[in-house]
Image (cartoon, rainbow, N blue to C red):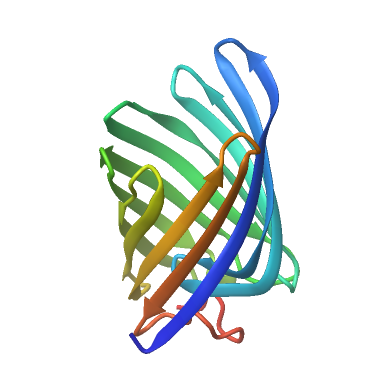
Length: 200
């Protein structure tokens, strides 16, 4: 890999309101020393927070936001997920930005998993500041319950590039705190270039 980054992240998570016995609302807040998304540099030293609602039927709904330096990123998402050893999900995610950091992304999200293996596919469109572009993103993740995880992600259609991520997560479950360190490498994505961010 030509470009490598060591990316530590601290995530604080806590249950906010148990809405009913059939649903749960949770919140999270945290900080990353470098914010990378799908192998692409977004911002140095970024704070983030989110709120999620999940129902026993499998319906989920949430929002998440992060400081991206030149404004804010706000994500909105919803869908259905389920399963035990074999899992599935189908949903929608919209990514919205202030101050022209980037333009809007809208995507359909599909995923299946079995045990420690997960396959996720996003099919989306980037508004592109008036020049829309279609894209796909596919990732394969191997994540044992604790410790090391491995991920390979690849863009397709009008976007191009792939990356490999190797990480380790330490969870203090009673305190609701996670600590993650990851090594991200790519030959063709800007994992450490602040001038390019999400440009494809």
